Image (cartoon, rainbow, N blue to C red; front, side, top):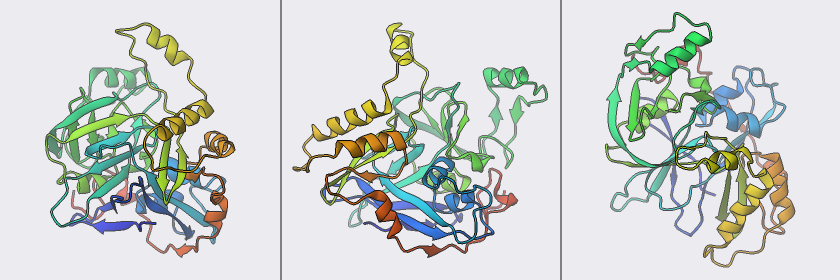
Length: 350
């Protein structure tokens, strides 16, 4: 497996950077196990390894978020099935709650992918799906609150909610923002970083402040952006098929052109049907003569929705056995602390 490379930039931000596979596979990273430190919450561990709330909690059911018992084995689900090719620009999978950035290749250097967890839209809001581009970049943005968001806060009894937020660590837009071509949709930091991995936004995509600091200088205006909603991802590594399942994200149906879209949206496919269709679609491509699949495992993955890529080839290892065999690492990093709970990247000067 490829090892996770944690790179520290001059702004002390972390970037999950992986070499792109060159052998025809489409999986990067690895699952790790750490021993709980009594000083740290699950969210501290998640943020250190560039994971979101949904990823760390789903991978560790039954473990206390705020007070993991000392000595507990914490699964770090740092293995990811990449979105379908072409691997260019920014690809966001809202179901995975994850952003992938494929920078242009540099001569004589291996191609890489950078991936970060994101906070996504709340159930009563949605993010447009499709293709666009980064059209502008803003450092220390101010935020003029859109009328519909302001009215929502008033209707919820928050009559003192501002109509304007000045630049600074208290700004919900964060300290850095990338504007997409979709109206009022930004990829930006957040003044509530512990919400990364949750459904917290009005349509924008939220990054940890340190991840925004890493990404902002590297992404030029004009970078293509593709936003997809694919809860079931099929991957291959070493001629073994894998399937990962994220909780499906319902999006508002666009009924402006076809009223039948609403009826279709009201009858969603079952997770098992979605998983089966994803596998069949993958097998329909030229995948180099992969073995058959274990349909019982596909059913299990669809029902369990454990996020971790799970082998679905007949005779392949059982994921729980794989995890049990991982030698745990000691986790002795200091917790982030309250000072890291605003829009400024840890260690940066606001």
